[in-house]
Length: 378
Figure: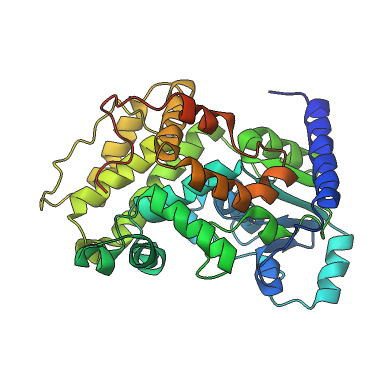
């Protein structure tokens, strides 16, 4: 854990990079998101003079729960005591405010956002919205991708959109960015959500240093007595498990139109392995393609037992690295260069590599087939 002074210096360096790159990229910096969409992403607490720009796939559910606590909406101090599915109300956004009022609030508030390595965020969006069971996204994005980016698609795939590969998803993402069509907030670049070249944020947090950055900001603004945690790492992972169970069972009926429910549970299990919450050595304990009834309680308990047997977080983090390489191993050099252009502004503004070195290394040292596949059962 870094000292408070070291974390402050890190924030200052991030701000310097944003300002420098905003100037350098002035002619390339074009945000396609509407002003209404930007306003909707600004979460406000006037009492504490805080404005948070929420970006999907970068801890926004967590921070929205903190804003529920700050607003008094929830009579708890630990955000993990609020279910993720209940994190979408109980705080104010700038959605319905006129721009002069927003400008006044911004000028008197501490403003912050969290960003993430762009290639990691893109893969996370694919895993959460298309690989893992998510019938809303299968219908809206998956079917669109199958129809437009797959040759000789089966009728089942065209109807369900449930088996999109990562390579097909990347093709879609690049196309949607280039033509500004059929985009979704979970995949749109971070700079478009928060406009960091127009709004001067006080803090640019990063998912890679999420705990340090979060604890620093809570303490700096005297919020650490209002917002408390018991065991941040374990609570984060248990919260992800419970949220996964709640979500997959909420979609059981439409899932069954496209695949056996046991297969959907397998993908939910795999998602938690890809995220490094479950060890890849703890196998899915139910038969695949089975009609046997598996209750939410049974599945939740199986996941929690698997989590207990999954070893340390430092061991499980290798899952994320391996899954990342497996996914990007599908991407051709030509497609990778096009993806680099689509992610260039985020990479530049927030101090990330234009193409991560570990992806470039795949072109020199392709992955060996070692048997275990993270993206199984597509």
